[in-house]
Image (tube, rainbow, N blue to C red; front, side, top):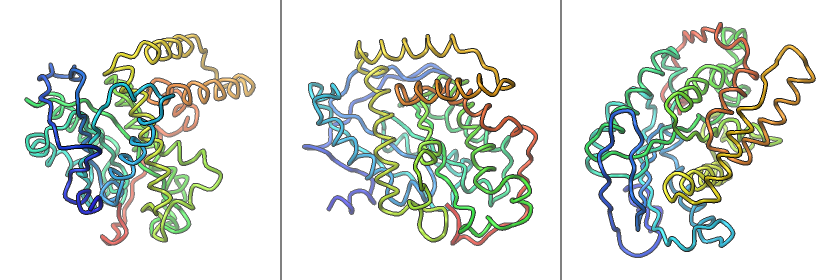
Length: 325
């Protein structure tokens, strides 16, 4: 039954469905929704989202929120997810669908995850930026405004994906390099510029000793273990952010303030190898302590991809639909 409900949209944790009306937000601001008896997450994205991400996230949220050590059991929140993924879609397609979805589903939170299909459909990073901005603005200015959370796209396996062996891709550092340096880079920048929470899912996958084991044979879609891995991290980021931003939990706010103070005191130096290594270690510590903060992700991105701005990633071959995300 739960699988059927996932494909139809609703996933219910306990009891019946209770929808809490949110207050309209001022343009460019996150909605200030009151504490809710239920919180509905609409997950917008491509076929990686469609293939099971909302269900994986819900299962992980159920586990984490029932753990007394996480400080959420007293709130008794009914968590709901809605699968708004679409196969082969880019952010441009999501921009065209999101208005109607907001009107019918009335979510409290909208997660946005794109980037995989932009590459094979030859979208430029600037076009991606414009479309992502468009989605965010539609959500934040809609009559039923929701909070926005950005998610970076999951990795490609260069050795298995049909574009991975193309010379023009190899000349630019590889397919996954282009995805993360260019398109995920845009997602990180937008989260930081707009003050939005970020789930840096690609970076999290790359912390695993063998991240490619989470992909199926096509080198882009996730297997069951991949969805479990991704869902657990998305859930952790969402709940940490939710405690600080929505529930106004004193401990969560204190932790965020401490981390931001530490981040502000860091001095960025990429010319001295010792300083660079020290900074990367500090950024990893900050990331693991408060994973939804986009500020540290942007600094990490600049250090990881110092020459990314000069890359065009002009992909000239369009693959068949069976290979996209």
